[in-house]
Amino acid sequence: MRVDLGNALDTVASPGIPRDALDRLDERVADAHERIETGRENHEHGYESLNLPQTTDADEIRTAVESFADAETVLTVGIGGSALGAATLAHGLESDVDAYFLDNVDPEHVSSLLDSISLSDTAVNVVSRSGTTAETLANFLAVRDAMESDGVDWTEQTFVTTGEEGNLRNLAERHDLPALDVPDGVPGRFSVLSTVGLACAAIQGHDIDAVLSGAQAEANRLSGSLFDSPAYAYGTACYALDERGAGINAMMPYAESLETFAEWYAQLWAESLGKDGLGQTPVRALGATDQHSQLQLYRAGPRDKMVTFVRPTEREDCAIPETDLPGLEYLGGQNLGTLLDAEFEATEASLAESSQPSVRLEIDRVDEYGLGELLYCLEASCVLAGELYNVETFIQPAVEWGKRAARGLLGGGDFDEADSVADKSTLVIE
Ligand SMILES: O=P(O)(O)OC[C@H]1O[C@](O)(CO)[C@@H](O)[C@@H]1O
Image (cartoon, rainbow, N blue to C red):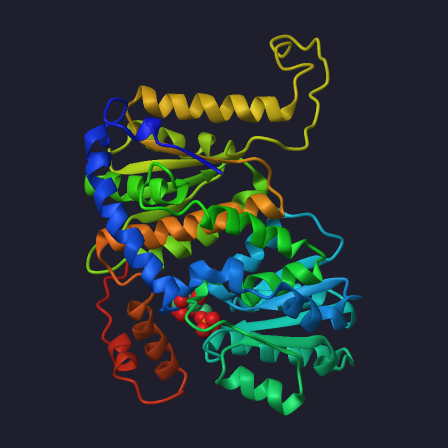
């Protein structure tokens, strides 16, 4: 895992980070690292997430899902951190076992998905840390109903991943379903390297030990200096650029297999750092595709953002056939990977040329080890940034208002928030 801050410096970009500012920030990184290490040693809420490469028991996960070894499909029912991590691994890696994620309650999507898969060959993984999330529980009921309609014994094909208490834990106990524990002290968005993110990967036959090894390699590089730790370097650069006006961070991986990683990053960054009026707004982009949709803004728009370029330096390739079509000769005989790398470097240089800040993140390959490195690096950089912003990184109280309002609207209790919904101001043009 390599992090290159060159194009984030003020010698290139505006907003940009003066080199001596990085040195000054490094003193705060040393303090933050000490705080983080103390939090890890004491297994404090949130900080415990950074211990997962060592505390996650891969054998326990494999044993818990071994009865689903013949599944042709694994369907994860969960939302936010209870889906995005597993989806990042599933969409980042190849497998003969298909993986689907029900992480929304769009009725048309849910119905068409359930109609499109063979439920008799599907392992269902219901994931909820709290065990109370309405979308996940509603989707589970819809899945169960569809299985029963197909004459499938859902109790034979369903397992849950949840906390010690809650509706899902009760359901698992009542129906004697295999159940994996969400580790204590690990918020959803930091749980990919635990049972939450790895159960689906294990059913798909991925090497979850390699994921944890990649993560551990990044954990071993956490130190009291950003100049020795890619994760802390990235977290510091994002914080320093935001302080200087880059309040938006466009995560732009140059690999289709990392598109869902950008979604996972968006939850991590938004829910962890978006507090007290602070926090960088994460934007999901994809290279080279969004060069042809967003780049105009990134280069010539307001100086309120940074771009994070991500790429694997090694990948399977695909040849571009020789051609005598006029004007295309320069492409013939090349590889698509060569073209993609040229696009990556050219786009990065185009931002530097217009003094727009960017940071480059590189892994060797999008494989289990590389994804473990990347996911842990972003988690640790987020924790470090949270220390620099001095926000409570591991809570997300602002999401609860809407949940109470929705529950009230559905008759699930008496909530003032639901009353406020009716007070909406309107100015309808139709
Ligand atoms: O795993 P749970 O408890 O169902 O929560 C799902 C997601 O919902 C949130 O609580 C936000 O509403 C996220 O933090 C979490 O990842």
